[in-house]
Amino acid sequence: MDYRPEDILPSISTDNIIFGLDNRKLKVLLIRRNIEPLAGSWALPGGFVLYNEDLDMSARRTLQNMTGMSNVYMEQVYTFGAVNRFPDRRVVTVAYYALINYTLENLKAGPDATDINWFDILELPELVFDHQHILDTTLEFLRAKVRTEPIGFELLPQKFTLTELQGLYEAVLGTVFDTRNFRKKILKMNLLMPLDETQVGVAHRAARLYSFNKETYHKLKDKGFTFEL
Image 1 (tube, helix red, strand yellow):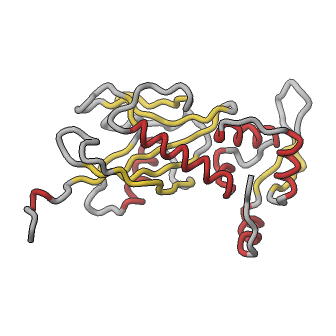
Image 2 (tube, one colour):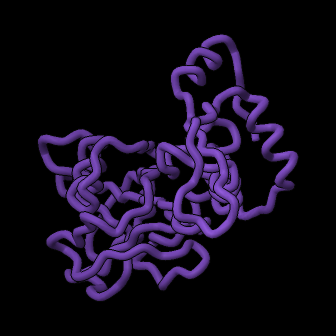
Image 3 (cartoon, rainbow, N blue to C red):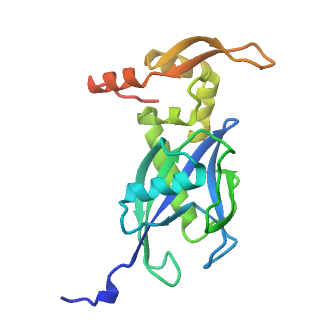
């Protein structure tokens, strides 16, 4: 054996990058730390993996404790293990991202934080440790993913308009689509179910509502269909 027991990595954590869509703006959920090091700083919500947990369980526990949500889309992104990324001790962090409907209900800062809040990804406070790098890496991963899989629908309510759908993709990708071309392309995929319902309580002409047909998507995918935006 060419190493000492104290040389073994002692700590593994998971960090959650939780995205939500608010008024056509992509936002991320952050907490304000109340523990050292760097108490008072804004951070991605996360925590250490417990002895009886696997990585997915740890990430989902954190998400549920802070948002009250459990049945949401989550995916592992990357592992961050730079030697000096955390002061005083060696910590390896596995990042997960979650896509949830934007909400202000049931948000809980948790025992290690004094506040929890949504921030526009273009107007972020300074983040603790290497959390800005983790967020940037995850956002790049998300942007690549939404172009090839219809995961973006997870950010919308079950019933949505084509304008809301276009706004979602423009917010995530940081671009502007030609409305006519976007609608033509998305409708041609046959993944949307037009509903016999329209918007309510709007000042303008009410638009038709749609829902995403997951069952149809999986059937098409099994036949070789590729979602590409």
